[in-house]
Length: 172
Picture 1 (cartoon, rainbow, N blue to C red):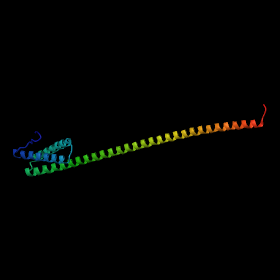
Picture 2 (cartoon, rainbow, N blue to C red; picture 1 turned 135 degrees about the vertical axis):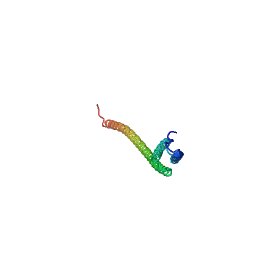
Picture 3 (tube, one colour; picture 1 turned 180 degrees about the horizontal axis):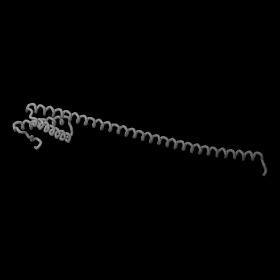
Picture 4 (cartoon, rainbow, N blue to C red; picture 1 turned 90 degrees about the horizontal axis):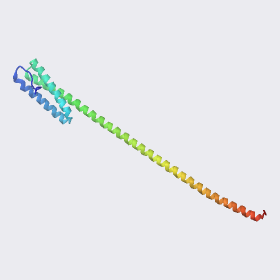
C-alpha cells in the first residue's frame, strides 16, 4: 500500500509506524461495527483515519522526535480523531432515525385523521339521505291517505246531498 509507506531516513522504525496505522484502523473498524454504522461510513472513516495517521506520522518523523514519543502522539491524536468521528456519526445516525420516526408518526396520524373524517362525512351523508327518503315516503303516504279520505268525504257529501234532494221532492 502506498499510504502505508512512510519516507524516513532511518529504516528501523518504519515497521512501528505501519503497525500503529493498522492497529488504529482495526480499532476504528471494530468501534464502528459495534455501533452498527453503515459500511460506506466505515470505509470513509477508515480512509480519513489512515490519512490523519499518515500525516501525523510524517510530521513526527520529519521533526525527528523520539520514536516512543511519536507513537504516543500518533495514538493520542488518532484516538481523538476516532472518538470525534464516532461521536459525530452516532449523533447523525440517531438524529436521522428520530427524524424518520417522527415523520412516519406524523404521516400515520394525518392518514388516520383523514380516514376518520371521510368515514364521518360518508356516515352523515348516508344518514341525511335516509332521513330525506323516509320523510318523502311519509309525506307521500300521508298525501295519499288524505286524498283517499277526501274522496270518501266527497262521496258521503254527494250521497247526503242526493238524499236531501230526494226528501224535498223537488220537481225539476
